[in-house]
Image 1 (cartoon, helix red, strand yellow):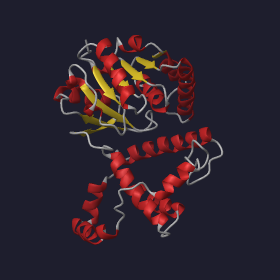
Image 2 (image 1 turned 90 degrees about the vertical axis):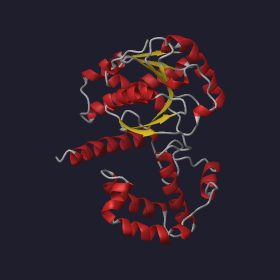
Image 3 (image 1 turned 45 degrees about the horizontal axis):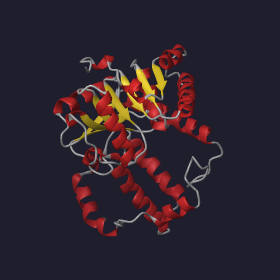
Image 4 (image 1 turned 90 degrees about the horizontal axis):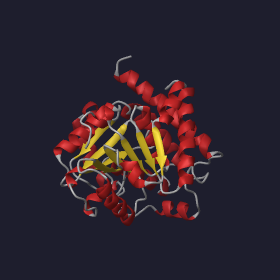
Length: 318
């Protein structure tokens, strides 16, 4: 039976990859008992090492105390036994491969192992799970899309399915907000949700400018960081349009659409880079070069943590 006190919820996280381990770490940092499941024990060992490294990074940034490292790790139970990992959970957050059959199989087992009021969620960033998952009590099925790194980024997109109940949305939102997350609710599942749709729209136009020889990736990044960076830190596109002037946006929306990229195909340059193995940080080369993946990710996480702290100071008038 699901605990009515969201502060006492026990959390099962399925999948110990980069997202799963960060979600497990975050929930444990917030005082929740966490059950981290992965089919392969070796991956669980790697995940626990990475979680400990992440915690020590936070200590170095004075985000948590040294004592909190051991306290957080003690709240995480790692296991390759799915039933044991979910039988005490109030909410299950699935982070397995983005493959229909994989998700069908695991949710079929969750339906068997979990009580009927346990909330079943997926951290998918691309799939409409509601179109292919069949479970009893579908009112408790939803998507909770965290952003990487999940122990740092504030947002979770909460996506309801056609049968998700208002009560499940309400209580899940309360649970996430109690951990300190910002929650954006989508009333229906659309490809890409909110952020991926907007991100790809911006990226498509940026790629178009590169492919047309208008500007380099470096100069486009510079333009975005120097404008969107400080403004979007405290206001979204609708707030920004109010200050720019709705009439100005009307003019832009009349003049620019005919010349913007409207291709429905993946940019050719992305196909070429993928074929060449230029996959970004994880391969050492992308639009930029990276000598050390771990160092690059640590530096980026540090910048994100510091930026979030600075943004909160601005929002609170400090």
